[in-house]
Each structure stands twice: as C-alpha cells, then as structure tokens.
Length: 171
Image 1 (cartoon, rainbow, N blue to C red):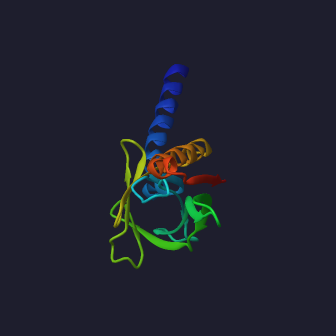
Image 2 (tube, rainbow, N blue to C red):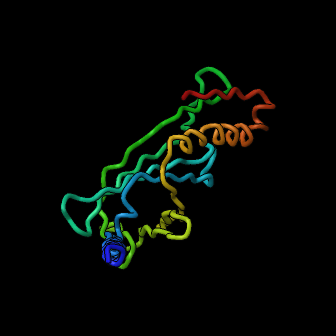
Image 3 (cartoon, rainbow, N blue to C red):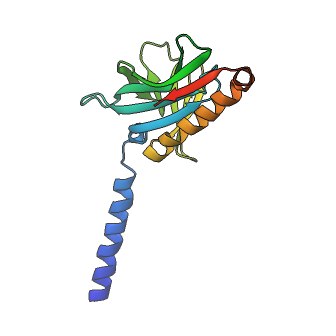
C-alpha cells in the first residue's frame, strides 16, 4: 500500500512539473546579453556588437534594447605616414521592442528590424538592413575579437605597411 501511495504522489509530482514547465514565458529566451561580430565593414577590422535585452517594466510584451558598438577607429599619426587604431565603444540610447508572433520587433521601425530566436542553436538572428547572428555573451568570446580585428587591419594595410606606413594600436 505504501508503495502504491508513493508511486501515485511521485506520478502526480512529475505531471505537475511537466505542466508548469510548459507555462514559461516564450519571450524570456530573448532576455540577456548577446554578442555578434560583423567583419564586412571597411578598413577597421570589423565591428563588435553587444546587445542587452531586458523587460520594459511590468509590460508583458515590452522590452528595452541597448547596443554597444565596438571597433578600432583609425586616426592619422600627426607628422608621420601612419595610422593609430584606437579601440572605441559607443552605447546607443535604449529602444523599445514588442514581442509578438514569437519574434521581437523594434518599435518605430515599421517592423523592418526584427530579432528571431533560433531554438536549434540558441542564437538570435537580426533581420534588419544587415543580417547578424548573435550568441549569448561571454567575456571570453568578447576578448577573442580584438586579435582577429588587429590581424585583419594589418592584412588590409600590408601593401601600405610595405611602403612605410606606420600602424599602431591603442586598447
């Protein structure tokens, strides 16, 4: 009798767990800090974007998005044939977004800027004017971009370096 009683309660507990797990907020997978790299941009080695998504107060479908854009901005070295590439970070003003149809739409952009969560690989796809794929942010991944970008700049500038161009980096 005790065994049947335990099996009954254990079965009930498993059923309740399954039911409650299905009641999660589908938009919660968007919340957090995301990271992407766009290497298609000019002579600065590319651009790194950190996207922070958080709930907008108590709103059920409202979110705030803040982006940090990082890259090497180049400046001429005064009095010399050279460029100094300076690591810069700029933070955007928060924009609002609305969750509907399992997508996050940036408000005021006529639904042209949309974030879609890819369940298979746990990435976030930005389908705006430029297509970008974000993954969850880690400090380790962020730190990997600077050496890649420096190498890209040096490769792009190799011809000019061979002609005497001085290239320096300021982190």
